[in-house]
Image (cartoon, rainbow, N blue to C red):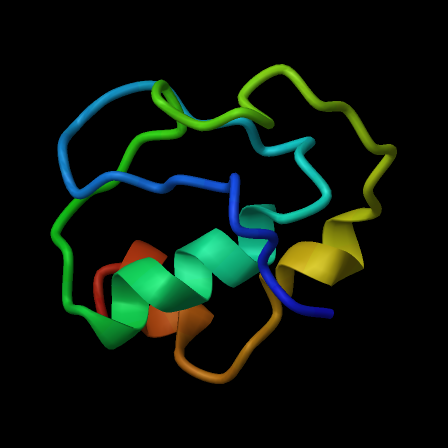
Length: 72
């Protein structure tokens, strides 16, 4: 999947739309650019909805427990 031209993640704090079909692609853009935060506020798709499953967010990735569990 490719990010459409009218998708517009911005590197400022703000609201995110976790149910956007392009959210994971925008998250990849933010990570690749080492943005400390990003917002969907200025994006055409800011109100788009898609049913997502928790495994799509890959919360079980290696290191997840270290980040949120205090690294023990």
